Image 1 (tube, helix red, strand yellow):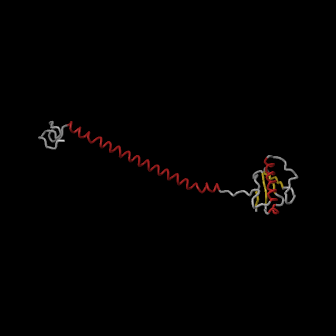
Image 2: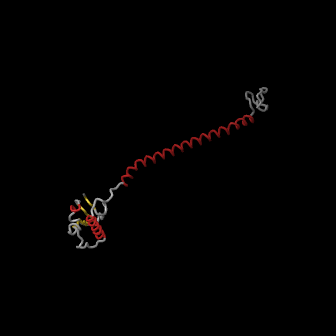
Image 3: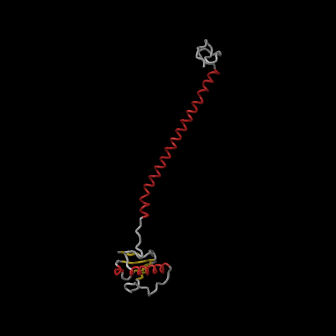
Length: 169
């Protein structure tokens, strides 16, 4: 670029005639303006990209945070659902052999109730020798051990609604 001051009425860049009071001719003014346009457009474009990526990143963090909060609130419900009292099963330390046979008989009674079959009269509690007590209450059929206290429990039952033998201490 020419830094010397041209004579009055001439362009500072190319020396062409210009209108009074102007330093550059129309062509040189256009060229100078075009030199600045790409830089400005690139800068605006980059600012827009940085802004968009910043907003995008912030939204990603917000979504992640919301998901973590939801999970944190659901964990107690999930752990509560997984915690169930294990049933007293045949052969545990809490029952003896006679009680295990009584429980096995009640499993058979539960299957017969579920299959709508007749419960045989010869099916008795191995400790007392008495037949199981069968109660009908509407659609519910309940079978009870005749002497649960001899097994060390207050109640031993099965029903069509709860076919797993229940032992109440």
